[in-house]
Image: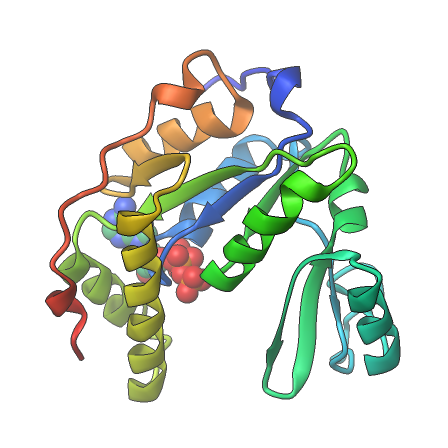
Length: 219
Ligand SMILES: Nc1ncnc2c1ncn2[C@@H]1O[C@H](COP(=O)(O)OP(=O)(O)OP(=O)(O)O)[C@@H](O)[C@H]1O
């Protein structure tokens, strides 16, 4: 496939890719980044956890103390942050701006999406993210993919399916700017390419959200 040009009107609009674990976000984004190596970027997050062997400050993460992290939180620097396993993780607005002229792609969970929705319009100038829901074709298929990946313990599966329920409920009730159903990697990948580059018609090229029966997520 020939590489296409990014629409300059969307470069400063972060593309927020959300959707349940196992939908195929990493699969599709890895393929997109391979096709367009210098066009997109993931922002570097801040964390209070200690660097692991081989990690470099400013590359995988900005490693900061708990004091510094909380002082940045108080100054309103984070577009989203959360605590996992005793450590804090978050994305600053500055980390997004630093990517320019690459378009920022954010792969974040529902809590982050909610924070970003509230905070983005209050920035000066206002930030205008595009919220994209990457949807599984069905919930039984989502379960199959998670199981098939073979990375989860029983407890991990339970947690992911619980989080998936919240993601899907939000998509049904509140909705996102766009939906892409990851049925085939090729078809979904082409749609993602169109949205990510902001090609003509990107705003209306999305799929309809499939009908879901949330009982299918019971473990
Ligand atoms: N269109 C597809 N058809 C069939 N299988 C797929 C498709 N897309 C992805 N998969 C498979 O589904 C599994 C989950 O995909 P992936 O790891 O990309 O999900 P993810 O949304 O990034 O999950 P997480 O949020 O947990 O990182 C993988 O084993 C992947 O190979």
